[in-house]
Image: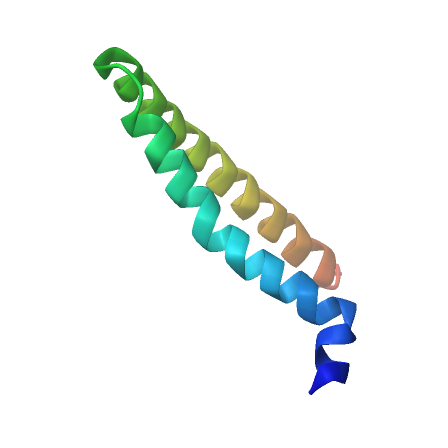
Length: 73
């Protein structure tokens, strides 16, 4: 059991899981502590950035699929 906790990948997994839980809570807490006008701006900013990241991910996936396909002759 002690050997499992000595492995660096176990700690990377534990820290990553903790960050996945804690960071969104901190973001929500930060947004809720803002004045009303800035809450709206922050919320719209998150929605816009989410859309940009989603579009970029779709673009990367489509480029990867194009590279994996053999060329048509």
